[in-house]
Length: 193
Image (cartoon, rainbow, N blue to C red; front, side):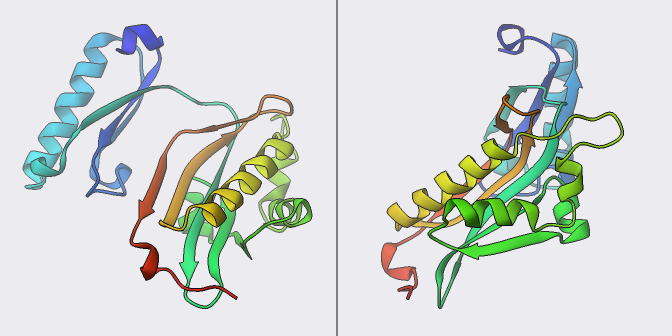
């Protein structure tokens, strides 16, 4: 599989039960050979066995390595009063450490999406910095608008976590490299105003 994709690749634990894969050694990056891919699989499996979590392993995902761009995140959770609440911020571990996130209730307008992007303190990273190109903010806005529409139309979605999303230079779009969508009974969702 990795040879078909082309090296370098990333190998990630596939598990519905274990959400934070990096914390348990479930993500191996920048693998350049079939041997490195096999070693990554074995190391992930060994770590889970050591932690008595091997039954949570459904396999691994092999994906092209994405190194360019600015890491951002888009999330959604259900607010019991207002319904779907979208979040936008810097992605990867930055969202947990910095807590630099902007929130809006759905449905989003074009102006809402633009304001969310410009509303985080880390926006300067999206404008380009120290020789790094700016990010494709129009593509990020499009992802925000599509997620907003998705959660408005699919009542069973209770949570979304797209993290990280690599925002590439202008005109090159975004790459979502990890996604989690939780669904539940429709009646469990709040009736929003």
